[in-house]
Image 1 (cartoon, rainbow, N blue to C red):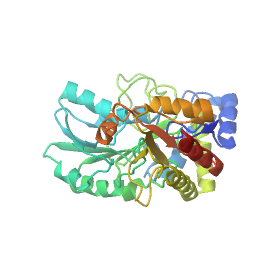
Image 2: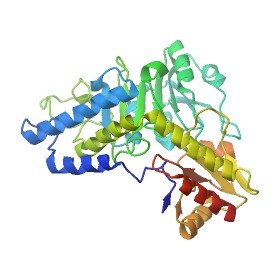
Image 3: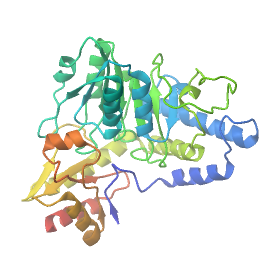
Image 4: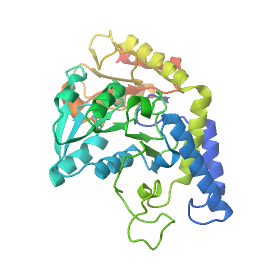
Length: 376
């Protein structure tokens, strides 16, 4: 199989990640649940992972790195834990349903007001809209770092300046960029960064988290066991226990920690440069084919390693199935959990075929995919 669906999950993991998970499954107890050797080893593994991720994302404090099952849980925790009733939130057309659905629910249940920075027919936004949409009751700006559909990136540092100027909470969904692009929370002005472990970071599924700027307050989205303050009727106040009810995925976190080590050893800039080269090679190969429409902008200096396209009037699911059955190429068709972006592109009925590349994608796989597109 030629695997070109890395925006959904990285299929190929570094051997070090696999080894770390296997070793953890043979050795780790339950973190923060006791003082025997297995529990202490789990606690140390989890804390070391917090320290690594704090450095990886330039988060000020390791105890402000909170683990979740994925970025969806992290975003729900951040959105539900910070937005108050009847307040106003600014977001964009580029968002995934992991941002949209929590916001829509708050709008329906707590009368939270929503405004969208719109994307044009090419999937591009106007940055001046962020400031234009600010109201007296605006509480937060929430945006993705890169579209999971087109790969176009948002200059989060520029948006962060707007948020800081107006004393607005800035929440960033880094699902498509964590592990692929350097992210500096302090330099970018990010208050809450949400990430997943199984995509660009190349860690196990069921891992993810959020990094918080010191001073940011988040109400717990779920409550329960933490291993401390058992007789309290409320969730412990201190981080990370405040936002980590229940047993952590210690085995997965061990793999996530190894994945961060792997990325640091290779160099995140080297990963970004290779993935951008692969993306450009594929785009150059397919963009001139008669009948092929490619979505998004390709003039920016950096973009996520994603190319979405369609073949004339053919349904994207039929095209993706043909790519898989005839050529052994794995892609993602349909709506990609990005409804507003498809509305902007005019592809709500047809969907799109998404090709997404990763560190372990080879050039010959790119060339084979180009040949398959030409043949179809």
